[in-house]
Length: 300
Image 1 (cartoon, rainbow, N blue to C red):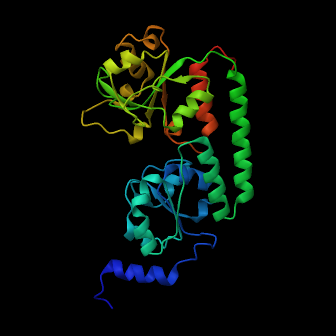
Image 2: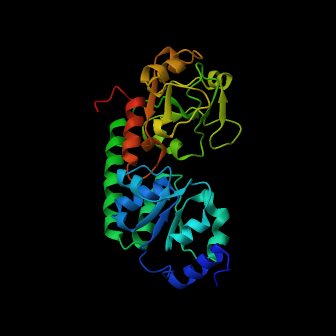
């Protein structure tokens, strides 16, 4: 027996110790930060056996064993953790057949719309025996979203360009990725009282690459820039993170670029932090931040 490959031994162990997929899971591994946040919100913190390196909320998630990144699946680590529920997102579908072969129960949570988040809460709530908590969170989210929508209802809808990724260290912005029509952010922009500046973008990509010429072509009235969290930012250049993540520097990069309407009127908002990159239970926080950037005339 000692000559068997390590992974095969782990597989045998998994067959012996695996919980039934229908049983309430006690060894949950989440490969999506949104899933991790939902699980903690549902009171499942003690049942989480592993998360990704990018799962940073709530703070308790940072103390959980790290399984790695979230674009790949470490099967050996999953078996070592005796995983009885694996929480995935759409990008992991390619691994489903291997997970089924290894008899590792999994669930895929979509996060492309607000309705997807409600469904994810409901689905995980049922699987974890926390249906009542899931309903309470969903109801609270809906109340928060409704309150924001009521404040911007009937107001003019300016065009908004949402930058989701760019090289922060370059002095002048050359290219960046922005949210197109087929994204969660398109819905957020509309609910926040704006109109996506890329609705007619021709590539059809969810997050098209935009050049300075492309920026001039769409000429947005407002620019919202999501720069993420400084602890996750890596650059091949030697940089001063305090400088790079200062509002003066980040907004200044846009103001020194193409003279589109948002630049001329200084309607550039930079939002830092991973909360704006993860549509989960804190979704009303994202919506309110967008609404404030789009409609500063409203009394918030």
